[in-house]
Image (tube, rainbow over all chains, first blue to last red; front, top):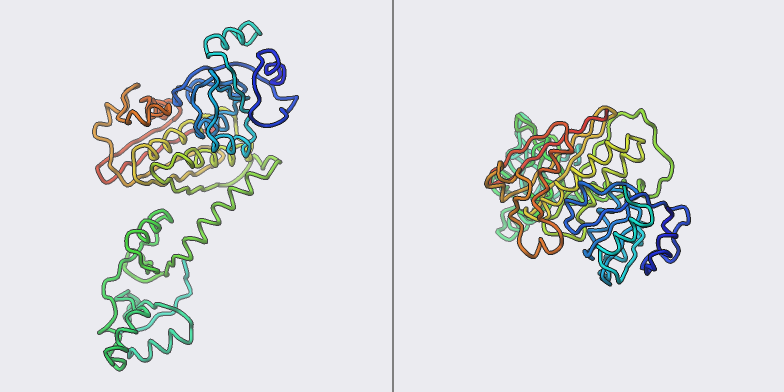
Length: 113
Length: 273
């Protein structure tokens, strides 16, 4: 599905950029806060759900070609994270939902196995 | 480094050395004997000291700094940078295996090389088109400052970007990115400073990461998934899951690790199948 559709369906807040590329695809989801696990298992095109807010999450997303990052449970990025995401062209989103419920909704939207 | 060298012999007078430095506008000059072997170095500070002691007619041999700190022609920019930081000298003679002088490296040379590396980074950033699939060899050298989470991931990012621009296989790029990232993070979390070098050829990517210590106490423990010596502070940020080395090993086709309190050397080879 398209990232813009996902933002609408899950009522996510857009942190950066102001407008998401309408062609940006989301093909899967990975949920986790230990960066080495994310590095090992998240796949290109995934939306990544995490509570981590520091700038290294952008590096991880860039390295893995992740589609976007959702900061769950109303977590807000540190300022440097926001700048870095802008600079690297990474879509940063936020949700009031927790990772469990958000994953469930993503699964229901067709991002499951 | 500068290869076109101005040198002097130890039997010149300090006055002659001073004149040479003034006319050539240089602030230091290596002293070599008739076999081209480096025997000392003389700087403006040495000249000033001689002038104060009214000693301008002395031989250079008497006032030069003997056995100066040298770099080897095989040292990396990273090693040069550490020497510069450790000794705070403005120039280092560069010698070959036979102690013959082959060049001189100044702080300016180091800065020029680093800015060149950063420029390479920028060009890769802005380039949209794919590079040729058939290429020769790309070498990357990237210093990794310890405990700097701000820049952590940049070395791995550079490798990934270059490989992407070269049009290499995405699964090979992924393996290299994962391995380089984990190796880089290990330096950032545990070491005081390190250096990542990568050689990218159409056949394989070889990533070498060295650091200056404190080394890994027990490598077989460190290779076990989940084993970590990271602090709670680091773990709160999601690092130190104890998956770094296992992830590297899993991503690599060939992998070697050596460690002592003086430092750790990781060599990771990923074949571009």
